[in-house]
Length: 239
Image (cartoon, rainbow, N blue to C red):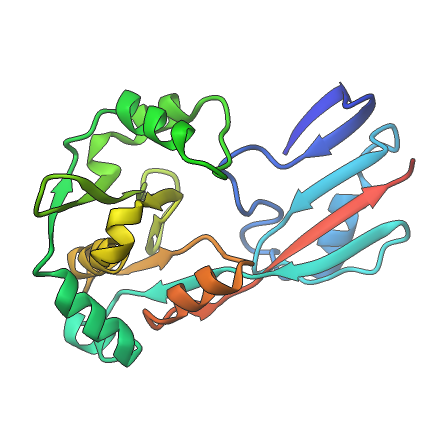
């Protein structure tokens, strides 16, 4: 976790940008005693703490801490595309069929500079320093986009994979993205996610949609057959 000796006027610990889940991993990730000990070990001088732990960490009972579970949708990809798509909502299957006639896929054609600039320009988007460096780290192949027939951008998504950092199943993260107004009409968001699913189908992989708490977005992700694999969030405020 990140920390600052005096952020917003007080010493505090906060969640680093682009990291949805941290906490205890490995052999003891489900051990509530260890999770409690981990949090109890944080020095008292940090009077404000926000920590997003992970889906395997249980909820401990600690004085001055507040815990809740936060939504995160994931989709297992170790099946054939036909089997995965049979779990799509009927409306999604219909939208994808239409979208395939209206969109074409591009992958790795957009530079990190252009993607970072595009995301900064989107109203209501959350932006952090280091976005361009993050894209460069994972490479342009992680940038997927859908183009409409007239060449305009319909949707774009950044889908880094985590196999370089951990063993076991590949984890494909829908870290951030955007669908344009024209793309909403052209169902580009449906098209783009379906292309990602087709690409990774039959691999020992999981597609992590990264949320969301927004009902409309959550419903969209569930339409692909994703299930909620919620994770633990803890806060401590001693001000």
